[in-house]
Image 1 (tube, protein in one colour):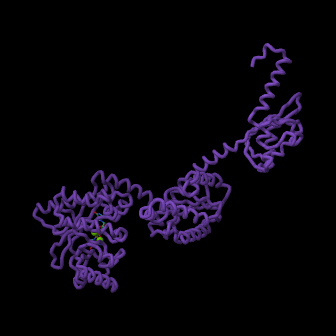
Image 2: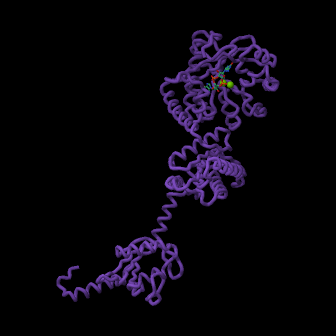
Image 3: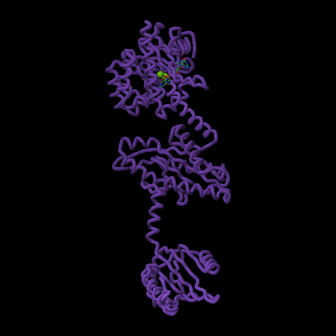
Length: 571
Ligand code: C2E
Ligand code: MG
Ligand code: MG
């Protein structure tokens, strides 16, 4: 506005008119008080926002809008700022005439003339909408949309707060990492909708079990984390307290959950770590609790486990091994040894292919040390395929050299067997190696059949049509379900080494072996005894009617070129 053409009096009049229009039409509430904070004027927006009429507030103190949500300390600081800087700006909660509390963004200016305070002018706007949007955004960003529990972000914030306050409180905190056991089974068999309902009910159970100031979060599919603050001030007592809580949690999880007429039972595994200072960070405690949770799973699930440093070392070792296993596959570091099997007349009946990992630095590594990890990571599918190809090629090259092995047994891991394209892969391998399918026996374990009985039977039947035989490995250590066994289209049972080991010392073991052999005969199955190390064991097995023997007494696992010199041991 250019007021050069006006006299000072005219300019003032124009300005005043403009200010009046602004005052009257502003969408922000405006309040003018005298130096004693008595309201002398308000604008229409004030009436609209607060619900008060002008005559109701004139002469009153703006405290009539006070919501009571700010404490004395807040107002004290506000006035200190106004008196020192003649200005204050901030967010606070006010109260409308109808009692409704609402958030405002407010500015207060002190008007000074001749060094004396003449007026206060306050301007504020209702920021409820903005707050609602902010809250919605916060909810979306910090809460799990399925269960309403905190999510990983919020958990992270709460953990950071704990670490920031760690030096003020000597008390321990506990972090529980909870993973549902075999949750995938529910999702796979009953669908994701039922799975989601199940997770919602688990979340409700957790809410009932813990205090309202404990933080309960869902950080992944079936992974929950609980942060318990302010436990005891010494480690032993905290361990006791948390153990009791973990037991209660395990018990509560065991109760069936009913969804859409399904009674579902599930357990969980819990990993726990404790912390009471700021020497750790949130990533680290989560990793520790996660590691402990794996230990609980490893110990048979439906269990809890505390984190300790050694566990971490093992987890690190495992990670390295995982990485190296992957490289081993790329660099063809796997070898196959062969262990012969004999009949009672000491004639060769067949041989078993047994994998070894020739590690560039650690030397020969036994399958017991890497097969479980290969199974967990899924690498077993590729590793198993390599063994199949190598062993079948070997059988063909023996054949070409005039050495006939009636049966070549190859171990198949469950994970490998349940793959959808397993049958196709076997067909391709038979075709490309030229092996005689009638000479191949696939060794599988009972646990596999227990969980996937129907599909396993179908798959076994398809492969048997090609000529392949099937054997149940390590029989006696798993479920050993006789009714299952009778339904399975298999050809052979391998009695686990642990029973053979104590044959001459343990009457129950002898009885078990005797029963297994009798039952196998009844089902017309061939029986192979594993781990035969002595003449005595051999005789006892023969007396029980065992057909076939494998063990150091006859031959060790050997490289392909050495197997026809069985008694020279190399491995
Ligand atoms: P398994 O299939 O039961 O194989 C027999 C194991 O017993 C072999 O151990 C063999 O070396 C050992 N053994 C044989 N006779 C005797 C004996 O008289 N005394 C003793 N103490 N041990 C004997 P290995 O080669 O260490 O293999 C261990 C397990 O690793 C195998 O048990 C099998 O479950 C698994 N495995 C081996 N190769 C493969 C493979 O290519 N694929 C898969 N998925 N698993 C494999
Ligand atoms: Mg085997
Ligand atoms: Mg075995």
